[in-house]
Image 1 (cartoon, rainbow, N blue to C red):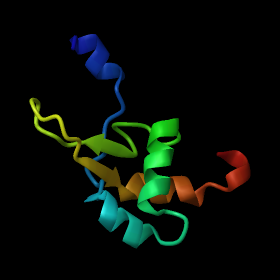
Image 2 (image 1 turned 120 degrees about the vertical axis):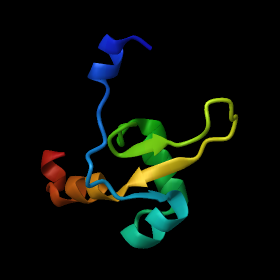
Image 3 (image 1 turned 90 degrees about the vertical axis):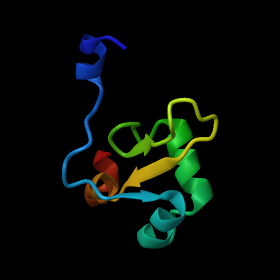
Image 4 (image 1 turned 90 degrees about the horizontal axis):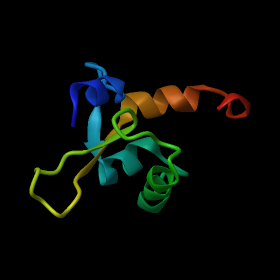
Length: 83
C-alpha cells in the first residue's frame, strides 16, 4: 500500500480500548450480540480502522477482530436522528 493510501485510512486514537467480540458484546450490553456486531461490521455501519480492526497476522486466514469500545461509545452518544 502506498504512503498516500495509508494517510487516507482512519487512525485509531491512543486512548482506544480494543477488546475481542465476546468481551465487546458483554460490555456494550443489550442490542450488541456477536451477531449484531458482525452485522454492523459487514454493513459498513462500523468503519474498519476506527470502530474495529482485524488484528490477524499477515499470513493468517482467520480474522481476529478487535472492537474499539471508545469509538463505539462515542457513536452511541450521538442521538439516533443525527447518526
